[in-house]
Amino acid sequence: MIDLIKFWDANAAFDKKRYWLLKTTDNSSLVYEIEWRKDSQPLPWYYRTKGEIYWAQTSSENFVFIMERSFVDLKSFKQELYTSLIQQGVHADSVLQKIEDFVGKDVLDEAIKAHKKFLKELVSVVNELCKTTPIAPQPAVNVPKQRHLTLIKKDR
Image 1 (cartoon, one colour):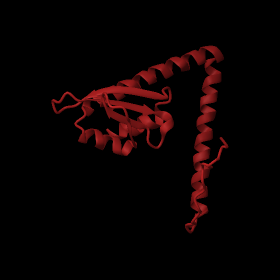
Image 2 (image 1 turned 180 degrees about the vertical axis):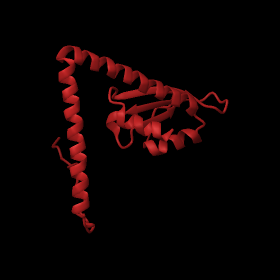
Image 3 (image 1 turned 45 degrees about the vertical axis):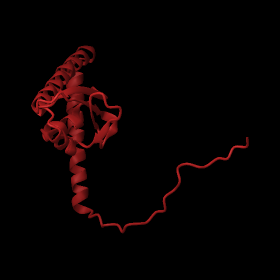
Image 4 (image 1 turned 45 degrees about the horizontal axis):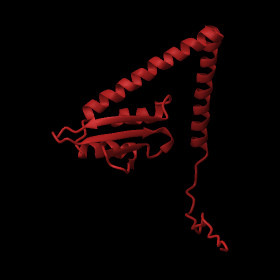
């Protein structure tokens, strides 16, 4: 399940937010609201029991543990996530086909090929830099906290 959650975090590109209602497996009447927010990394998962006012927020690594502990039906949730990924793949294919029709198959294929080549070269260069340039540990520096708010006195 954690692999699916991490894949979702890294690749759910079409949605900025996603929402689910999940039942529990312990025969209680509890229902959990689950929300994933792309812009909330590294804590993208929000959850609460239905009807609560405030959301709790957690990381992908802790999300599965918290849901298991709360008896959330993870089997159903896994299927919903999987289905959502498949839907996004179908949507991506549709978008790709429309772009291909608009710019031409050869142009799109060449752009994809060039992009993959660039990424491969970039990874290679970064790997080489990491091998040849050891990064020395830096001593911890105590930086005094700066105030983010300033008190402004207003004359009445």
